[in-house]
Image 1 (cartoon, rainbow, N blue to C red):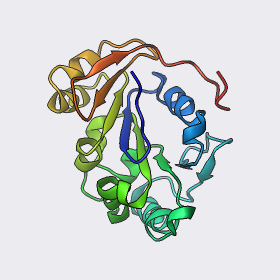
Image 2 (cartoon, rainbow, N blue to C red):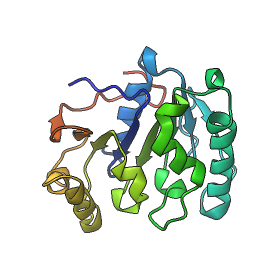
Image 3 (cartoon, one colour):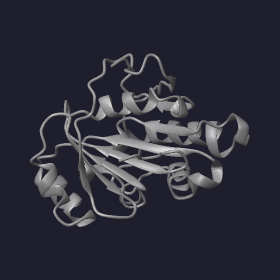
Length: 196
């Protein structure tokens, strides 16, 4: 199944070590996704065009993120904007507590108008802002085990959370904007440089 994330809002969720970073590396290794800007909170994407935030959590992080989104995307000339803004640890900037920065919500909601797609990557779907999850055009779901995460995914699509709890390492499910969720082949394993 082919999935295009340009101009779309995409979410990747799953436990540590299940394949989220591999999928991200695989996606951004493709030529059409080279103009990706990464909000790299863990400083793990050395070969990417990235923003290394000064803060790792809390209101300071969300303020820094909101300013960066405005500077790089919503307040920038179209030809200078990234095609995709990828956000690692998205639950830290878009938490389910209602403290999500307005520029992120605006970008998720109206990204195609800016010409920038979004890619939110997080371990736990239950910790993500409702709009970040529910406005996703595509959601890649790796293994989750927590009852809140399983329940949150089951609310998105019947049986999705239950199926995600049974996935093996590097297996994932795609929930497209239209249609039923499907289990995908294993994600290719890549090293941190984006090489297969």
